[in-house]
Image: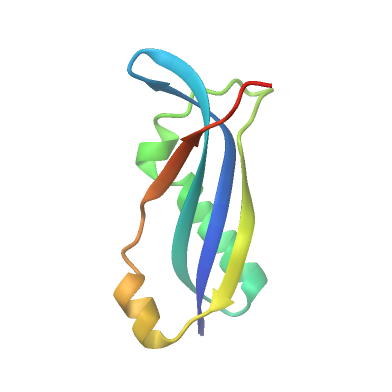
Length: 98
């Protein structure tokens, strides 16, 4: 099985930070094992959706769903994969009101 570094971009996540409801986007990097890049993307998105911290914080209505898309994907060596596999952080940014 191959190892991939998958960079994701989340948009339209309604969160309550400090008592204020605001929409945020985020960037996240996941390291996954998969047969091909398409499978790696699916696994990374599922892992991100299943993150309990994110999942329990999102306040969007069903009609205004957040989205996660692929920014970049590349195959990585075993050493790089092993060293970075525990990365689960999100980098959030406030989305501008349109």
